[in-house]
Length: 165
Image (cartoon, rainbow, N blue to C red):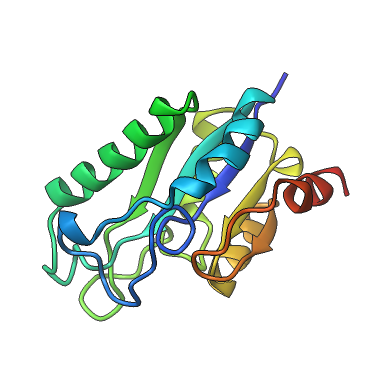
């Protein structure tokens, strides 16, 4: 049996959106109120997978090490409330300084990689993001996309309705 997943953009969905690159640990603020609705999906057997563009790495605004520290804070916050993030995928490229890639959203490379790695059924999965490019990347991978406002609390019932649609 294939797995099902909740794919999640990071900035503005799992942590506070500052409308710029988050370059320092002290600017990284987990949106703790997102954990309970996502824990419900985790308890129902959904994998929680982060799909995030991190072009600030290519721009030398922050390092892979800093990104790893931020993601560890996210992982630890979820585990403290009984949920587990399976993996965080990130695109370190930026179109102004990097060769074209297939991972940067709105392209679907990160989602397709996760779908293959974890044997996920796209039809049973959703991507929650706060930008149209998140929905576009989801749709390109055969996953339903849900657009929320930056820092808007994830509505379990709304997500469930999309999954059942």
